[in-house]
Length: 392
Ligand SMILES: Cc1cc2nc3c(=O)[nH]c(=O)nc-3n(C[C@H](O)[C@H](O)[C@H](O)COP(=O)(O)OP(=O)(O)OC[C@H]3O[C@@H](n4cnc5c(N)ncnc54)[C@H](O)[C@@H]3O)c2cc1C
Image 1 (cartoon, rainbow, N blue to C red):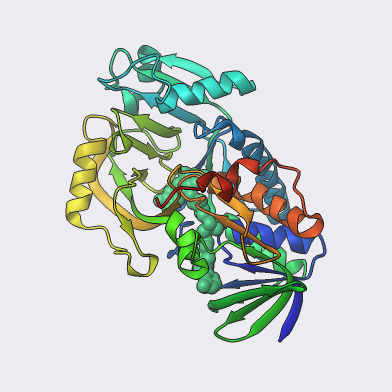
Image 2 (image 1 turned 180 degrees about the vertical axis):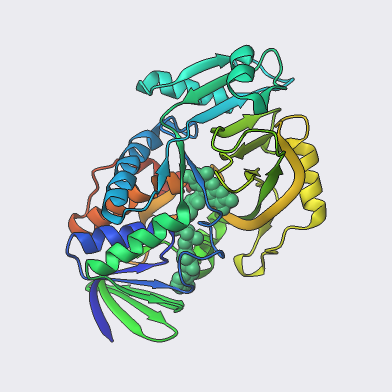
């Protein structure tokens, strides 16, 4: 039996941030991960993640992302690594179904939130979109754009790597390549069994991403769904001039999840642009995910999302990846104490939009371990909201 103050299970986006913040605060923390983060088997790979202050998913996220952006900058200063790039964030709707009063439209929601919270932004009409962003020269005449100059992307693998390295420098112990198999608790603390050891701690932060439902069982296995997502890097046309000159974007071109895509700046020297969509209709099991992207999937992606919508991009996919979301029925996070395991905070379902918040959430989870409450208001992420609901 090994003893420590806090165990963190899962050292991806959430766990790496938590382990770092705990170690920095002088807490004796042990982190465990079944793989060797950063890795390509969870929810935190694929080079880039969008970050924006106007979080169209809901106002409750705005203070969290604000704090996270400050922490990325602190981590950059400490590590010398570039983690957060303010490429600018363009959300745009160019859709035959566009209704300027539609409160569910992602661009309009983002715009409304920016106005309410005083977030710096510009509103663009079709002519301005075409003139400033020639890759969107084909937008409809009634297109609307939201441009947040401070938005952009973070580098997920680097963020995880930097925080884990700093955690170790501050005294954290990390056991990677080691799988947690069992968790129990009593009045004194928690007991965590891995395939190699037994750990006893005062507190547990559980951040196992896609695997949370399988390991925790009821109610999490019923509330969480795992959804395979595909990422595509499309080769640019040689003359397109997009490298280093394009923003991070979210393009709505119709109604429904399959009519939204997002993408990242063509990074200097890479010659390609990463473009993706999100799907919530076919759930998978994390250990049975098909991790290859077929030629047919590449063709479909180009024809349904890129062709005629994003100029300067060819149909040639130079790289692809599969990554998976863990999602609840309302697509919001679960951050709450476990209903029966004592001293345990569960962090889950952050997939789809969690990375941008992870640095600040890690700081909050460390506060929960140390003093039992957090500076950030996390009350909208409780389990209670699912009472009476059956499954995703
Ligand atoms: C395709 C895709 C695109 C996304 N785009 C964005 C975006 O643009 N912006 C944004 O903000 N967010 C985005 N997200 C969401 C964001 O990336 C996730 O919310 C975040 O990375 C989840 O982090 P996590 O720590 O919960 O999970 P992970 O990073 O997957 O970490 C979980 C860890 O737990 C470990 N683990 C699991 N089981 C065990 C066990 N039994 N024992 C020990 N260790 C275990 C795993 O090995 C893993 O390392 C995206 C996600 C995906 C998949």
